[in-house]
Length: 162
Length: 253
Image (cartoon, helix red, strand yellow):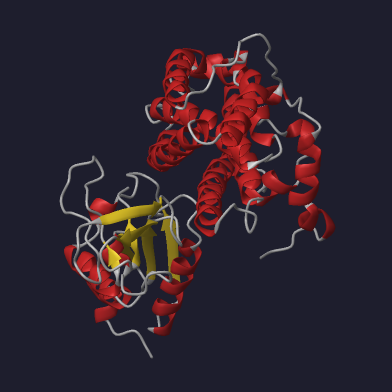
């Protein structure tokens, strides 16, 4: 496929990258996560700026590779992916749409803002019960904690506030 | 390289060393945790520390600009070139020992990174701002565990008490400044670690008291990590961690 003129502006690149998802949570795009910080186009070179979620998150390397593959499949050969650390990533940047997709996927989205302000309650994604118990501060990935519903007894993941 | 530039480079590397060595120790719990959830938690915390090390080393490599990368800094230096605090290199011991060490480091990190986030060196401030968010979770967990173990069974109490007794004298060097570091601190770049001691001590006392533990006496102290003088344990750790790069130089993942 050859890049059309349309896909070489930042908006077009943004559209193309909406297909790139978190490899661990494949319902969230990089935009939903707030990892995609900037896109700039200079001549025929595209610079995509991302920010890491957790310092040691191994998914970052995959995301970087997926960005390059996606753009290269669209005929854009000169792609630079750069990483910025500041401002530090926060779950406050997760899109509203992303939060809904996360819940539908079975992971409860963050219930507080990064500064600790309560924005929602943690409810079982299976039965909706609010009587839940934290099993472990860390779940299958750095960004999640493990909870259990005290009513239907199902364990579930909770996306921590950071 | 100017002397203050060299001091800054050394500072990045020392902070990277603290993170990498503790991260490696924590990673040794992978598949050895007391139960599955705890195995995952320990290795997740390990990843956070290794991630920090990568950030510090990458910036050090950029500053140095001699063609070394983060992997060269991690895998091609010997014991005497490592600058981590000794507390980070001690063997994992039992679970009580691992969590007692973790609490001491997490309480320290909360104070240290809060200050470092104010550094005039933008990359140090950026790494610190990320790290402190993760440390908040680490501390919540280590604090919870120490209370459970200390105020738990007779055996858990005894094990965690003896862990603190063995570890206590390793805290001193976390608050001792070198001359180079003092100069960086005067320039608003490094943290005046000596000023963190009071808050560290009172937080440790509060948590240990709640955990029904005795505060060990301050009658011994050991240091030298920041000068490259290590315990015998670091050599074994490096031998394992660096094996692949030493045997197959330049090997890429």
